[in-house]
Image (cartoon, rainbow, N blue to C red; front, top):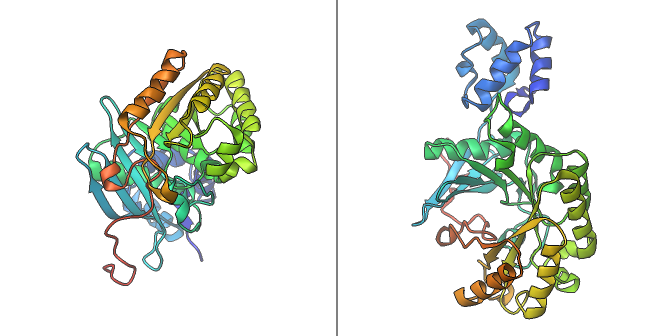
Length: 353
């Protein structure tokens, strides 16, 4: 008999699990809190349950975990982690998460897919083969694993790692709700940001469901043809259609959107690109996070500090909230666009048993 993955159940599913055991509903809340707030690693750590009940649970369920295969810390305090989230030593499902240190924030950037099905020309993750969506527990385990390794809790979580979150919508949103549940990690809902490369049906669903989390959109170009050249997803969901979807979000939610804009010299930083980006910024409540290119794929060039600052000032002087987010973690391959499983990772054959 296949055992139930206890860590993968939401509160309602846990209630059903304990109901089937003839136990009251509050056992589910106790277990959920122990799993997601206190981060129990073994069924024996479910301390609110009697020993006999823990034994019964252990006969039916398991608590899989993720293994840290590699970690590297940069001089700026950013640390990259490579996880095996397979829950088994028989195969590797490797993803990356990044701990980012700010003046007042401790942010974890997490992955939602193994590899990525998109092919953005500036992103190293797109060079990996796509191996599938992560389950909810595998997403959560990145947060729990990083926090345990660091010995501190994050103030923010961003779904900006490997993969497209809206191609794994249900698992991503389930993880976000667990992270913000009062019985779970208890993060504020506005402390969680979900990013998308521009999956219009996902944005519309996010809007219609009135999801409380922050929305970020990887824009990266202000012209339709230019965006199609560096982001193939734009051929499916053209820029005008994407922007209209984001306007529906801002109009319905009352929240501003965040646009992420990777600055690529000679590609998306010319005066006409700036003018169009200003027009976009004025068309809806938003802020623009500028990110200097961190890869050298396809011969693309990172802008100089002067070029990046000139572009930012052009937005600010036009009244747009624009910020250069820099490249935290660049030296350890953990900056935006660099997640490509680079590190000293043991093979399955060489891993200790």
